[in-house]
Image (cartoon, rainbow, N blue to C red; front, side):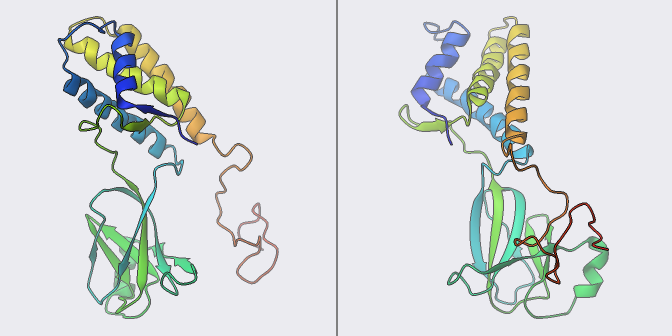
Length: 233
């Protein structure tokens, strides 16, 4: 599911929206910069909704270090997994996040990591593993489109995303020429609301659960799990 347009098409549509097809007051490179800024806002709206649309992974090997640097393009962390058999079988265990009050409990212990903490740009694993493969699952930073060529494709996600991006650019372009931006602001905000609603409701038949359960619908003892009775009495 993607809605892609070339950079040249987006530049043309943005110019048309503000009636600047023949106006050279904004250069071609600046139009791309404005589109890049608007794309960053689009990226943020989709990411903040909880929709796993922008997602990346990166593995690393534990070597007994105290901490590990986060991926250079990371915006937000989704999960840290221990790849039990490396990349051989796909078996994984997701680590829990350790609360700051729990740090003394894990300090000085070595072994396979069970919990993690992300402090600034450093990941701490506890117990401290001397070996093993681990994986970051994260939302990367928005792509910088300013250097895109005319034929490079830009994913605007949905028609609402396309509309949001174009009106974001319109606000910036009109503001530069000291024109009235009130209509553009209104259209941008309406498009943002529509995009956010769609992103939040994408899993139409599968609402998010507040309690995580085993993949087979049972609890940790193998008994049927009732989401409504999350204490499993």
